[in-house]
Length: 94
Image (cartoon, rainbow, N blue to C red; front, side, top):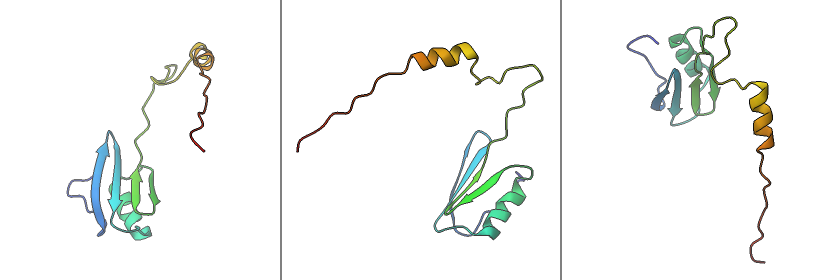
């Protein structure tokens, strides 16, 4: 993102979580607002959902032959599958 960023007129809040950015508006944003934010984050995925514009985090760069740090291997997947719990629902009154 370039310094001196410009935000859509109806912007109420801009927050950052890692490399992600969330722009919250007072009202629904339009395509001009979306394009304004996209222009400030070239090469990034930027989406519009009503009064929220999201600049998605950049994917982690993983070298060839390396496992993504959050990827599960087959043994972990099987282990987690076996750890599923039975869920019961309780009825209340009536």
